[in-house]
Each structure stands twice: as structure tokens, then as C-alpha cells.
Length: 363
Image (tube, rainbow, N blue to C red):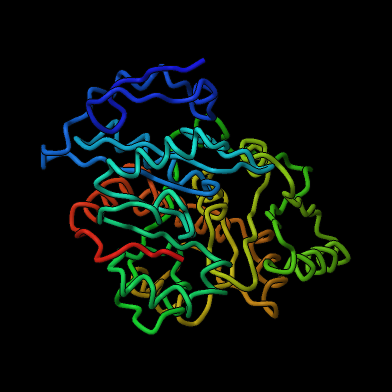
């Protein structure tokens, strides 16, 4: 069975597979509310394709929702894979028909915003030169930046990073733009309100381990065990192999969030700030310099190293004023820089300023 949906990226009819109606964020029946979308000759409105293997932290899902709701432009997000986290998505493309549909959308898009990876055959085979925006997030870019950077610069791609520490992985850091990860603050606060701590309840310290070696999880557990031997009533909560909504609920039941001993703050840290709990995290000297540009006096998170983690955890627990101050700073920061509406406005200005690429990366 085929389903005809009119006006996804342009005013033509599109043929899409019936399984396209099954998606994380809603149903395709919602799309006619967004159409008919402009013919491409109308220069005031952009057709935007947000393309991911899997949509890290729902960045593309959130941007797609807000672009369509708050701007004259029209966007569609497509993921080519899913995992145990089960982030919401707009459209999941898994078979040859889906891939052909993706290629068709890519050929009609004014802007293609891709998450992390470049080897999409749907893009490599395009004949035109759309505005290309590539968005880097972490491990893959740290490993491959020396290979990727010259390709992206030669091709004329606009280059984004989601964390400050990625800015140092570049021979030309001025060519990288920081785009804060979007966080649906109102949605999180409504659906996952912070659990008030009972007088005799343990202090719960959340930590989304993901890959333990990348986060310093063992050192975190050692610090918690040491504090327990000192008589502190604390309980480390490891968030591992959980779906996204369950992770947010677990975080809302905790009192403090610990991020990482090796990398800058990630999306989970900002979700914790939105929930209203203070964050402890390491960041590199380079990233700390960038943070100080925003906050020359007081950071919105508690900076820690392997040597200071235990002491700062103890301080967060025993000093109620410090806990409240750091929680308030974090929430203020996430509202100022990471609210989805703020990020959408920022990224749309980037799309509008991006020029067509010189060529498409073929490898």
C-alpha cells in the first residue's frame, strides 16, 4: 500500500511507503497542516532536510517541529536508524523505497542539515549544489576531524559543533560555529518535574554512563562509595540502556547530576538543568576558556576534575545554599541558550546565511 502526501517539501505529490505513518513524534496525517509548501522559486521560504543516521538527543526532531511551527520555512527530518534510547523522530527510513524517497527530498531541498556523518549515498548522488550544513557532536568528530575538516572546507560546507570542547579539534576553529543542543524546557518541566527530597531520603546522584570509559564512571562510583563511608546518605543512580523518556524520569527523581570527567557538558547535563538539579562536570581548558566568555564570574555548572569530584559532591550535598545556587544558575543558562525556540531562531539564521556548497563530498 502506498500513501500519497501532498506538499512535504514542495507543492508536488510525493509517494511514500505506508510505514512512514509510524513515527516517534506523531503521524504523517499531521503533515497536510504544514502544506502546501512553497514552490522552490519562492526565495522567502526554504525547504530544509534534516538528515541523521540516528537523531542524537532529538536535535533534528525538535528543530523540525519548531521550524515548521514558528518560521515561514518548511522542514522534514529523516533518520536511517534507531537504537535502544528510542529518541522521537519524524520519519524512519530503513528500506530501498525509503532511501529513494530520501534522495527525492534531498534533490528538492534548499538546505540539507546532516548530523555527524557524510557518507549518505542519497547526498553523494545529487547533481546540484544545495546549502550544506554538517553538525558534529562528539566521539566521531574527535577521532576523524583531521580527515573531515579539509573535505568540509574544500566543499564549502557550513560546520557546526554542539559542545565547546569540539572547537579545539580544528586547524581553523573560526570555521566552526557553536550551536547549543535544543532542549524542550517547558515539556520537560511539565512531564518530568523534580521530585522534592524527603528529609530521610538518600541524596540521589544521577549519571548517564552510556560508555563508562568515556565518562569516568568508575571514578564517580568510587567517590560515592567514599562519601558513604563518611556517613553521607547518598545513592548513585546509573542511567544505562534506558529509553529517553525513562532516563528523564529517573533524572527527575534525583538531586544532583554528574556528567563526565573527560568531555564537555552534553545534552543530558542540560536536561538535568531544565529539570532543576545542579550539574557537576569536567571540561577541557579550551572549553573552559569559551565558558568564561559567557560567564566570567560564575559558571552555570560545578567544574570538577578526578581529584576534586568527591569534595565537590560532598559540598553539593552538605551545603544547601550552594545546591540551590547551582541549580538556579543551571536553569537560567539552559533557558537562555538551549530553549528550542532560541536554538531554532539561531539555526534558521545560519541556514539563511549559508551559501550553496562548491561540491558534494563523495567519499
